[in-house]
Image 1 (tube, rainbow, N blue to C red):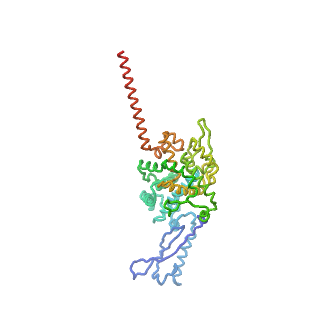
Image 2 (cartoon, helix red, strand yellow):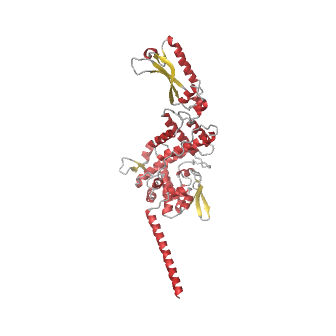
Image 3 (cartoon, rainbow, N blue to C red):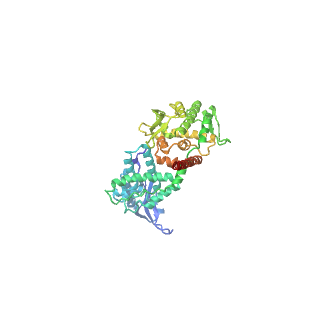
Length: 472
C-alpha cells in the first residue's frame, strides 16, 4: 500500500493560445501540476510564437530554445523538490511554490477536520471514528469537484469557508442521498471543526467560525416520528415467521418463480455455493436464523448485541431471570425479563450462533466481522420476507420496533419501563415507538370514560347520602 508521503508531484507543460483568432499563433506556456488525484494550472510566463513548429512533447524544439527549456526544467525541479508529505492537494503544492506562507496553506477546513479527528480518537469508540472519517471523505470528494479544492479558515482569504459554500455542499448531499445521511455528516463535521476552533481560537482571532453548526434541515417532528414507527413489523408477521421458520431452511429466492422463491437441494447448493459450507450446515444456519429472528422479536435486542460472547447469559433477580448488559451503541443498560418463550430460545441459541464473537468486553467491535454476519442474516430475511408475504423487506431493527410497540400497546407497559428494557431514553421511546394503535386508543378512551362515570356516580351517591343524613 502506498504511504501518504510517497505520492509524487508531476508537472506537465503545454501551450495555451493567447487569442481565439486563427491567424494569431502565439501561446503562453502553462504547467499542469498533479498530486494525489488532484491537479491545478500555473502560467510559467514563457511564450511560444508558433507552437506547431516550435513545441513538441512538453518542450520547445531546437537549440535556440535551450534557455526556455532550461527554465522549464528549473520549474519542474522546484516542484519536485518540495516536501509534498505535508500537503494534501496540487493547489497547496502550487501555493507553496509561489511562496505563500505555510501557516496559511495549512489553515484549511480539511486540515482542521483532520486535527479534530485526531483529538476525537482519544475519547470515542472505533464505530464513532469511522462515522467521522466517512464525513471527512465525503467532503473531500465534493471539494475535488470544486475550483478551490479546499476552503481556507482565514476570514480575509478569498477561498475562505462561507455559509454559502457549506450550504451548497449540504444541498449537494441532499441531491445525492437521504436527508438523514446529510444531517449526520454535517453534524460530524460540526463536531470535528468545533474541536479545532475551540483550541485555536485564542491563537488566531481571524478564524472562520463553525459554519457547519445549525446547517441541518430537520424534518417535521411528527413526520420523523411516523417514519420511525413505520419501521415496526406487524406482529401478525412475527406469528407467521414462527409458523414457517422450520419449513424454509432449504428455500432460496427465485425471481422466475411465481412465488418469488423455491426449494433448493444439496446438489444445486454444492454447484452454486460461494463458500465451503456443506448442505446440512446451510440448513442448520437457516434454522438458527429462524430462532434468532424470534428471539429479537421477543426481546427487542439490536443485532450488534449478538456479537457478544455473553449475550445469552442471564441474571437472577428476586422477580426472576433477566437479560442485562450495556448496549454497544449507547452504552446504556438494558434489562429484559426472560419470558418462557425467551428462555426456550436461549437454550437453543446459546453457543450456536453461526459467527464468532465480534464485540469486545469494552463494547468495541470488529466492523468487518459484524458486517459479514449481518449480510448473511439479511439474505435469510429477504427469503423470509417473500415467504410470509411482507412487502416491506424485514430488517433486524424492525423487530426491535415491533417488540417496543407490543410492550406498550398489547401489554400496556409504561414508556419508562419499556425504555429501561430497551436501554433507551424515555424521549427516544416516546418519539420512536410510543404511538398507540387505534384499538389501544379506543380501549384507553373507554377505560377513562368508565373511570370518569364511576367517579361521578360516587360523587352523586355521597351527595344523596349527606342529604338523607340531614333529613334524618
